[in-house]
Picture 1: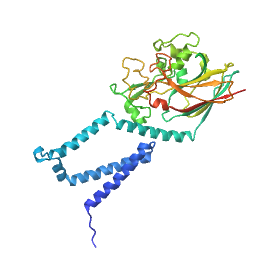
Picture 2 (picture 1 turned 30 degrees about the horizontal axis):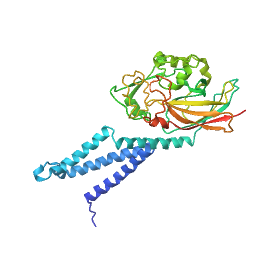
Picture 3 (picture 1 turned 30 degrees about the vertical axis):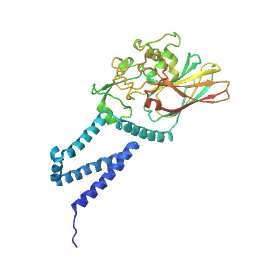
Picture 4 (picture 1 turned 90 degrees about the vertical axis):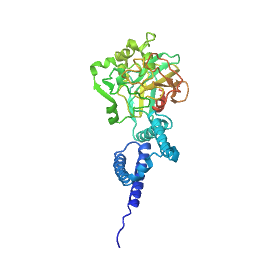
Length: 382
């Protein structure tokens, strides 16, 4: 019995099987964080599929030429070439302009992958940090911080305020902000490129193609980043003078980095969920505010795109601020039997640190509202 090879059956089944693998790996790469195995299978099978398709096209080149041949409207054949071309160009235009439905579909995939990765990290890691000042006699506080799906490497500060809005003391400030330690100078390779989506999740390869990084610690004093945490910086800088400070004066960052009172509260940026133990230096009023401000660079969106404020030298500078900082608050009542106080999202700071106001309109924010999953303040009474 002789074996007969049916080329059409072999090619059709091969295309079906390889396409099935591509489909499954595409879905996995869309909804799950990157894994080398899935990426390798997707890439390898993809090239094989291209080879099979190329061989199929080669064997059917005569039919393809027949389909592509223009017959003109009189013969009724022109519409068969025009419709696919219009659909192709229309789809390509939507993709390149980042229009609906491609942009929200892409951002949804980012959220799914980030959430999956964040869920894995939350279940395995939780750091304890003690920033209790020496000789403190005030309230004992525990800050239970759980990061959200878009938390990468932000700057943040936690501090105490009176109900009247007067600054009392910091509880924690990230080291780079506290000591003007932004040593790396980041530059875009293509100065004309515009960002309108959150690029903080870029992998190393995409990052290297887009930016160049130069270590320049001797110029770090020029990168005080007043736009990073403007609400906290203005509060801290004006704690004694009560004057309104401008980012152009460079007093915002300098007042923080040259202040000895901040040293005991500064620490390396905690990139995990954490429990922060602290205590107010002095006795507190019966009711006061605990505030947290957080900001992450490179988290652009359709409103806070990289070209949104071209005349603003700070927003358009090398800080790549993207969406502005967001501010959370809990009001602690010492006379209440309640020990736990969840923080709520109040609003956002100024996009370039021009003032220390909290803007409650958050319609133009997107991923910035998901840097934090939740924060709970625990009051431990003596």
